[in-house]
Length: 314
Length: 251
Image (cartoon, rainbow over all chains, first blue to last red; front, top):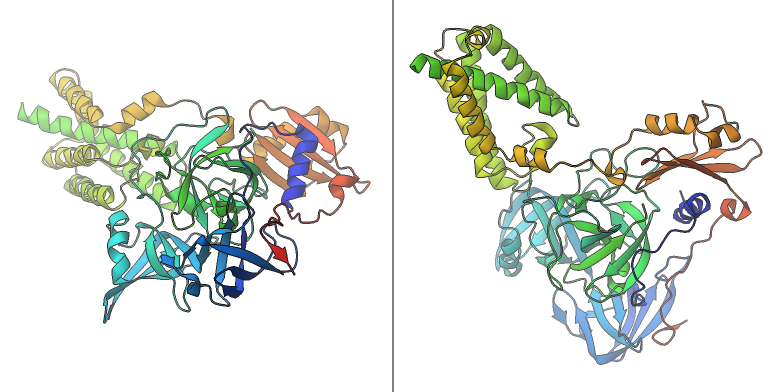
């Protein structure tokens, strides 16, 4: 199945799709790859072009004293060690790196088990998480210094509870740093449906390479790519398929891009939370973006979400 | 009067089981839901035809256990509905839902010593019993979030409606575009996918080409287009976002 082919089939039979969102700011030229070398003024990365394509290339990224580095929290340039995974977002003028996230990942899903291990620093919580049918089960460690922050959003660390943390990759299991977004609050009433084909809610990210979006309501019939046991999403989303085109706009930065659906976001369907990045979004995760797509629209990976508008042609 | 009160409890429990079975029958089913339907249906029938103590005790125990389970669900899965009355019970469990099941458990416990079967009591319904019955059902309705859900329900728009593939095939096979391409009814589509209110089906043609049909799930409209060379040609992956040259230098 080629996503481009489906898009062109659709245009051939129904005509060019109508654009539902006004043209916004263009996406930023994000780059994600492995650190080859770094100095206080230059970062060298071995990376694939953000749009896909074959082969890797070496990229040299100028850095200024305003460049901010994340490595489990604000870090210095010494975090940019060779071999480490990094995502770079440029400044608006495109002249230097604005933010660099090093070894950042995210773990979200349903808790399978929680075990505790006593260490010198205190109790280490090890949480086994079911990330849905398309992603592997993973174990994440919550160190004592992060436990308080995680418990604010996830007061019940019990099997069956939803769990979402931003974490730092290590040689072993990822280490939780902070909760992924606003709390997975209970649903009191269904959120409003789309206004003129435009849905509003929350966009989050998941640790996948390249560009694209995981969408929580893919049809399970035919070759659409959905899961038969997927839960009904919190937001009132239309049925789509792998390869469907989405117009996605970050309502906080005004940056927009056309993205393909590349994965079933069954996991996102479970969450009924809001993003409070700029105002309070309606409930429900509309899309999970890959790291590069999230950052190119101006999202901060360590914040975990942004308020989003998503348009789908009906 | 006490006897009337106790006997009416039996009717209330039977009525609520019947509603629960009806609600669940009109909702998507999995193995657990089918089991729940069978159990509730069996108890409903047994309560109607039998005055056996075991049936009454089993009913009371089931409802009291359900109260405990719902209270756990309210705390541990705060966003989840109980599914008690099928699709109407998708709103999260609240203290009112727990209270309602608890009251039904008490009603079932109160009906344990009743000597007559449900059908015999039902035949005596007119009079005081009917007034008590209506008052209790009214109280339970007031505690039920399903009532407001039922009032607010609107038809599901086409983009969110589950439509079986066989319905799409039936519409497609009866359409003029399908006849125009002279495909056999047994032909299997090479690819089927859905985008909101449209389902797309790609079929290979005898001349080696392909035809795509778009079937509207809103009004049954069918459109078709054949593949031209541009469509069938392999598509190269696009580098649709290159890092800016101003920022990055490549080696």
